[in-house]
Length: 520
Image 1 (cartoon, one colour):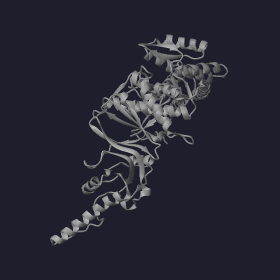
Image 2 (tube, rainbow, N blue to C red):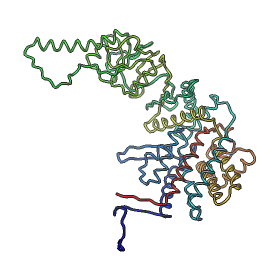
Image 3 (cartoon, rainbow, N blue to C red):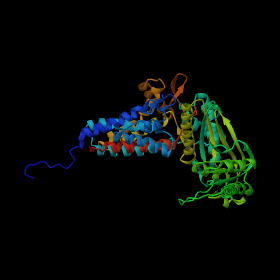
């Protein structure tokens, strides 16, 4: 090349290599993890997230916090994906997974400083992850998943998430009732059959379970009935208005008779829509398109309740609840196409009205009608309820429950350390580092409950050694070391398994990166 340099990358490209790249990525991952660490546990604090538009989100849900943060660093974004994966797979444990991933990176950084090769760290972490899964399996409690046990699981998931100490038990009972209703002998719990509908204007304790669906849409005419018992229901994907031609045509009206004929034709068409609905025997009709005022007036005179502009997803829920057929035109209406519900009622809650569809003949769907005093409270209650629903489903369908309050993590760390001595070479250092990283979870729980982290960790290990189980229990204004099972603090095993897997995969992927190339 005659001594001339060879440029492969664009002149605007930036490249970071070796230890600088590793240090940058690990620091970014640790920073994201640290941002949610104080939210862990029943004494965890909330974060207020304010957007450019002034929208405010107040929560301690790890996945929500990380998704709302404007994170650009690619390595940090991987920690966000850890939380999102945890949320998608099991619905809870997002903060646990994020904090663990960050601590695994911190321990890996120390190993890299001691000249342990990244590949050795990765191999050690994967070995330790397998040992952790063994420990989770051994920690599984041999308990009957009765309603009382599931209420404890749901309450453990919701405690500290804006539900309040008094309301958490009440909400947990509603959650368990909803899950039991949606469970089938063949398919287990169909999570999609459980919806959470929120509305401001009452205390959290007013939250209730509705066997059916709730929609925000209300009747199109004031004179329509506000409630219908033993209702026959039609669902239409059609516009109940005068049909317009697809051709751009122009009509010349030269006299009054022609105008009257055109108006009569329109009126006949609109009356035909209303008459077809009445003749079908439908008491209630849900329409995904618009309903003309004249059609609505005719239906109101006939005592038919009509709701327009229903979303496609809502129409789907109504069909699944009532057994109605979703039709594309009124001409297809027949008695066989109608669904059924025990009752349909329009109720005023606060300043808004909602429509309840209860007791459908195909009713597998249920709705948790969540209440709260403000929009921020309602939003956090909705997140807490969804987490609780997910963990109860996970406990029933994916492997039972394990002790909470950090007890399972103490058992995991102890199990990994007991096996580390049999592992040869520098890989042993990575396995031991993994165990130390897992300790961050009970240590953080202790910090957030007001205990001295080091003293608490020593006490936890001693209690685990002597009693076989030990966790950080929030009691009064501080915390104590005790048996979480006695306090009813239980977590689904699936949440622990997923947190270990997703945190390990993200941390090992980041550790292996030694070259970062970015371009405009």
